[in-house]
Length: 88
Image (cartoon, rainbow, N blue to C red; front, side, top):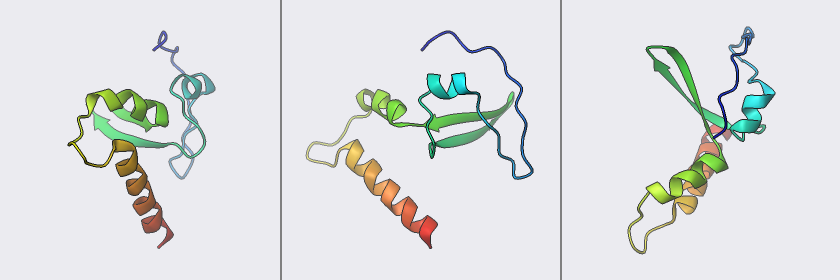
């Protein structure tokens, strides 16, 4: 990862939306439609983008059962189920 970006000021909309500065979106491979995990911390709100890049980085950390589905297959199934829930 490169040197941390300088601090930036952002604004929240009435719906609670915020625009992540371009430099950070580029650094963390955030594209349109990217989802993020939102966590409350003692310092404030932590946004952790769930991107293909971050998933691929984690492949080496996850051990799969022999003969089981790959993480990519499980993730694809999860995404399909998530879309089905959203469509309801």
